[in-house]
Length: 217
Ligand code: G3P
Image 1 (tube, rainbow, N blue to C red):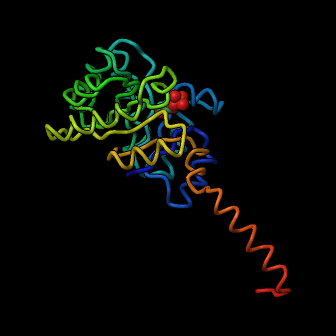
Image 2: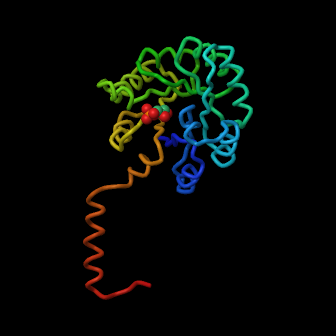
Image 3: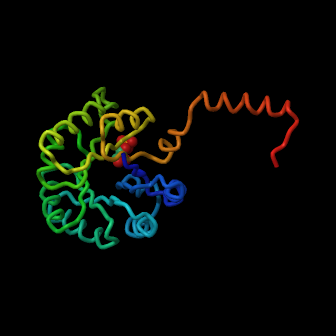
C-alpha cells in the first residue's frame, strides 16, 4: 500500500520523505488554509522534492472552471494529480483532464456508486473519506471494501486512495482490504510506530541497563 501524506506542511512532508515514507502528497483547500501559503507556491515547493503524485484541488464548481484551474495546476509539475469533487461537473472535468493525460483524483467520495461512476469517467484515484463517514455513524471501512470488490469485479484501474484516515486502525484495515493508497496526516503516520508494549519494554531495558553500570560509547 502506498503512503501519501495529507498535508501542505512542507517541513512535515520533508521529515517523512527523508524516511522513505512519502509515495505522494494530498492537499485540499482546508490544508492550504492551514499552511498559510499560496497554493501555487507551496505546491511547487512540494513537487520540487516529492516525485510521486501530488494532489492539488480545484475550487471551481462548474466543469469549465475546474478544467481551467486543473490545467493551471497541472502546469506546476508533471506529477500533479488534479483533485476534483465528486459531482456531475467534477466527473465532466475528470473525463476531459484524464483524456489530456493528466492524473485526476476524484475526491469527496462517500458511496460505492460514486466510486463506480468516477472510474467510468477515467479517474486515476478515487478518494473515499473514511473518517467523515464514521463521524455520522456509517462505516467508512465497509465503503473501502465495497469499492475494492467492485473495481476488482470489472478490472477498473482507478486506484483506491483511502482518505480522511484518523487512526492507526484505519491504516491497518485499509491495508488488509487492499486499498491501493492511503493518505493520512503526518501525526497518524507517526502513530503507526507506537505501541504501549514497545514503550514498556524500553523502560524496563533502561532500568536494567542502568544497573549494569556499563556504557556502549
Ligand atoms: O484527504 C482528505 C482528508 O484531508 C479529509 O480528512 O480528517 O478532514 O476528514 P478529514
